[in-house]
Length: 298
Image (cartoon, one colour):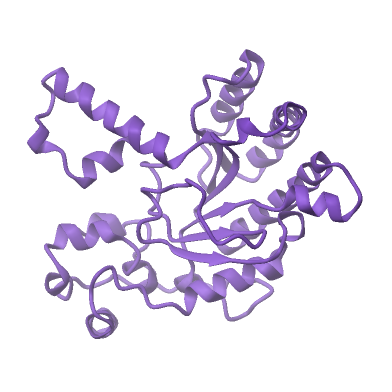
């Protein structure tokens, strides 16, 4: 069961993050039998000295909302906001690398975004291609792996080719993973997982009785990465818009009025600080969690 902690043995906070650990331990009472392996790490230099590495999320996802409204407030066309939003992406990736966050998932284009005006969709596709070409070398230089998640079949051959090249170039990088969700929807993700499992059953590889939560999770996007800890949405709306429905089951949610192009290290720090100060229970009581903390420290 401690296998789930292999990337996080240095962090007591990390011990609380994975619901799979709870399932594998057979319930909350059995959790108390597990000792977290703690290892000291040096302080991470950030704008907020209170953000210590052992308290940080391992996987953060962001719904990047507000580009169009930001542009309109500047008297510019909506596409201008999308272009300025690229700068916020750079800042966020840099901040996550600085903090040691292992995975950052950004909601760039949903499966519902095809309903937007044709000109805006076309510009978004061109921007996606341009950013892939301009940013991948920098990501590679900083040891960041790039992964595009979603249904890529509607994209042009040229865009799919650039995606494949970028993923191959950065495939061995391990400082952090940047996931870009493009033509992604949470329901599509779960449906796709069900289809994969159905094919396994049809081929006689597994039986319906073999299917459990771990099986389903293994067929979803991001199954090779840490559990989602923190989901942020910019732009003021309080909803998750069909994003990472399976993965967000136990994630902490944080919403801000800040529009995406204005999302900077200060706002990101506020989200991280809010996460650090929350008690995550995963179905246990607060007393059980505190008892677990005492056991782990001992």
